[in-house]
Image 1: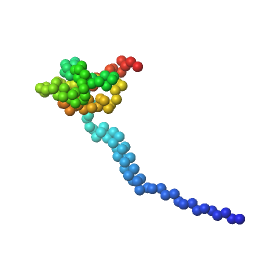
Image 2: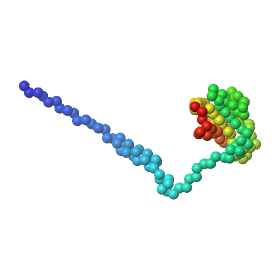
Image 3: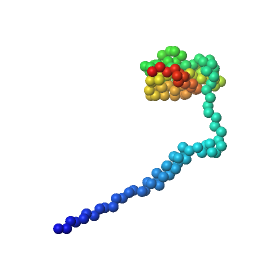
Image 4: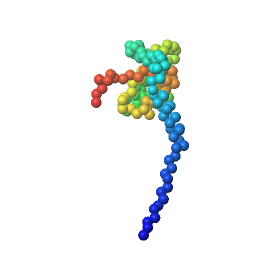
Amino acid sequence: MRMKKRRRNAVMVPVASMGDIAFLLIIFFMLCSNFAKEAGLQIKPARAFDLDALQESNISVSIDETGDIYLQGILMEDVEVVEWGIKALLEGRTEDLEKVVMFKCDREIDKSIYEPVLSAISEAGGIIAAIGEEAGTRDN
């Protein structure tokens, strides 16, 4: 009794997209490498304003742990009211340091709440200064 051997079909490996993948990897590694340093570019990181000068700006926006938004300590109905309020407070201010809006937010607040507030500050013409705690002062 003879057993018939089954013929195995050759497995086809699609290689049409291999070229695309290779070029994407090359681009990725080029962007992630240190070409900027090798090209001799001089990049200076941004510096924070002097904190005393920030406190003189007298414009503050806060979001508490419940998600309530406050402008100058007054509870705001929604983000549009915050934008209008900041526009009114910034009216007549010409210097960048006068347009600084101190933004403080509870660390548990979701980005869906604070991102529209940041956009409203920006749309109103304010320069955002995020206020936080020093790394060692956090209570858990």
